[in-house]
Image 1 (cartoon, rainbow, N blue to C red):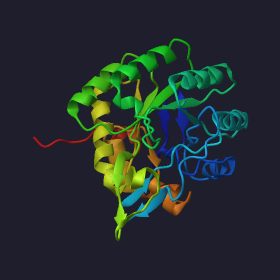
Image 2: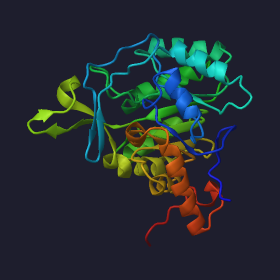
Image 3: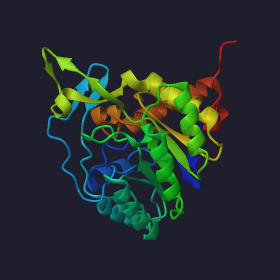
Length: 311
């Protein structure tokens, strides 16, 4: 029997598939549905210091090739998610989880992370450096100096397993610069990618979402080539101790297979989960297993990162 089990750092997972932050993770009830599904784990909605209502609706729309959104970080506040996952980890049959966090300022980010550091939470933490949908706020990870500064400060006090959620990079020089910074720190993982920022979708003569005059993050089929490129670029450049979570354009077993082939240790599902619900994990797992059987692979390590090039 083929296995889709994996690990991130010292944490093991029965399945490599999970939700992407922002999808099916706003409430405890949604997270419980992911916990009960075939997913190997869940990541919480990115929690801020205080609860946020987010941007005005409509702020999400399905499109022909995926989705567009400008959510504006709606969430229940990080304490809501921290309390839930801390309580959940006490259960003997609990899966390992990811707690996603970010402050609306550097000061808030440190306040949040110091609270988590002092808490009883023992699973993985994801610092979201790629929030493209907050008006007036740039994405942190596109500012290399600020990213370096934040990580330096964070790792002066934070000792729990920490990874970062990244926006897509589009230039080889940026892959080199970003990887050089990330390799300086004891990161457990990087997550590539968040949505491709500031796309525009039009129906008839009108934009399809309200915030930012229709500008929003693009997900789904549109972004898979960009996501695969980011996964593989960082797989080539990062220290082996820093693992990669692949996110973007996954709606089939083949898509998940390609992310792993590029170097991903886990694969997150966003748009397809939003459209299909938690049953998507069982379907895509079976499709991935079928590909592995066809190719004679028993585990993900048999093909992870082993992308072929043309001579």
